[in-house]
Length: 338
Ligand code: FDP
Picture 1: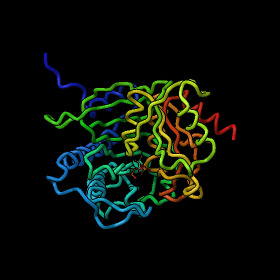
Picture 2: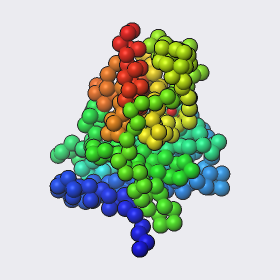
Picture 3: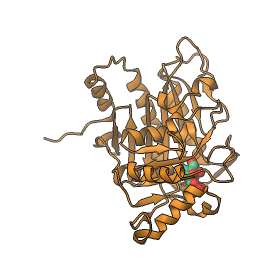
C-alpha cells in the first residue's frame, strides 16, 4: 500500500491527543499558518533570480543590518500568514523596529509569535542555505493588543520553537516541548512530511563552527578553547577537529542536530556591551529550546540562554554556545577557569 506519510498537521493533532491535552485546534492552526509562510518563502527562495528576489532592498533593519529584498518579502509573508486567521495576537520580527499588533477588525488569537523570517540572508544571493526561525509564547489574557513588555519573557516560557531550512530540500524542524521532530517538504503534494522523528544531538563531537576571522576579538576562554581544538590529538583535548561555517545559524543548528557539533557566536570586544551578536528573541531562545529538547546544551558561556533575563528591548543580543552536550560542557569549563 502507498502512504503519503505523517503530515505536520496530523503530527501536531496526534501529539496533543497522545499527551491528553485539550485541543481547540488553535495551536495546530497557528503552526499551520507558520508552515504556510515557510512554504511560500521556500517557493521564492527556490526560484531565486528567476523570481527577481535577489539583491539588496536599500534599507536597514532595527539593528542597522542592510536588508535584502528577500528579507522584506519573507517578513511580509510571515505577517500575512499570521494576521488573518485568529490564532495570533501579535508578532515581533527581527526585520521590524517595533512589535506588531494586528490591524483593526482582525481576530486576536491566544499566541504571540517571534520570527527571523530569513536567517543568514547574506547567503541568499550566492545560492547557499538560508532559513527562518520562530518562537511561540502565550499571549497575555484579557488584553486586546500586546506590548513590547509582553514579548519580554525568558526563553523558558516558550511553548514552541522551530526553524525552516531552505537547503537542497526544505525542512521544518519543530519542538512543542516534547522532543524535536523534522519534516521534509514534499513539493509534489505541498506538505511537510515527518522524516526525522525524535531528533537527538549526539553527546560528543569533533566538529566546531565559529567565524574564526573574529578570533582576535574573542574573550580569553574562547581563544584558549579554539587554540586547543587546533592543537588536535597532541593538544589537551586529545582529538582532531573538523570545522564548518555555513554562515546561517539555521544551517549550523541543523547540522548539529543531524551529526553533532558545536556552534559558537561568543562575546567579543566589539559586541561586549550589547551582550553578543545574535538576537535573544529571534535566534538565541528558539534555537536553545530546540537544542535542549534534542538533548544538547545552549549557553552564553556563563548560564543557560533560556534563562537570560530579558531587558525589554525586542532586539536584545546574546552570546551563543550550543550543541553536543559534552563539548559544550568542555567549553564551559574554559569559561569557569576565567
Ligand atoms: P546573517 O547576519 O547573515 O543573518 O543572524 C545572524 C547570522 O546571519 C547567523 O545566521 C549566522 O550564523 C551569522 O550571522 C553569520 O555571521 P558572520 O557574518 O560572522 O559570518
